[in-house]
Image (cartoon, rainbow, N blue to C red):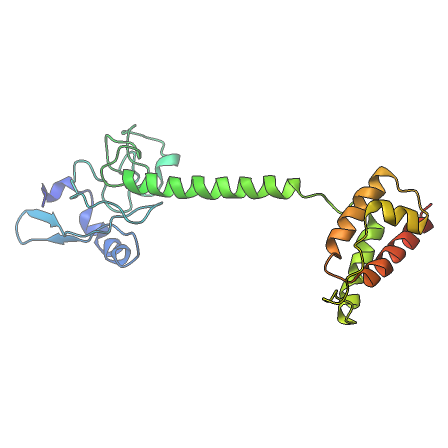
Length: 223
């Protein structure tokens, strides 16, 4: 418990109503209680006004280091924030709670919460970066005809054309596909066929043939 003369807090009576309202909000400054003497004490509370973080460490308020409610962290005057202060008196203060003579990274009240939240942010950014890199490795649809053919695969599946245990016909290879359909594949088309065959590999050979024929028909139209 720390003590201070009433005169150490500027305009305390004027701020009292605002303090009562602010104390009811999350992350608010602990309520200041008056005694009948010339001293006031800060009611112990785990809640301190924080503009960024929750879960701050409990540090007793010191009126010589901690700003009064609703004041600029730099000059301790009302009506503006520290980033727009025109008369800065304090150059070093915690950007979260306003405590003098420490920065956010060293503040005994806020530093651990700052490190915790920063770690969460770094983790989220790393995951997002990994996601972007992973998606970049996935090839785009290289053929509009192949994409259009894949739209019909679901219809073939609904017709009961999924491969069964009795379907023991040999699976198609690129060589047998080119020979059977008598079509010379370019490098890009070979890549398209690989993508297409991977997409329909769970279907029967008969159904795969239907998909390939439809795809080749579409490709031939483009030549």
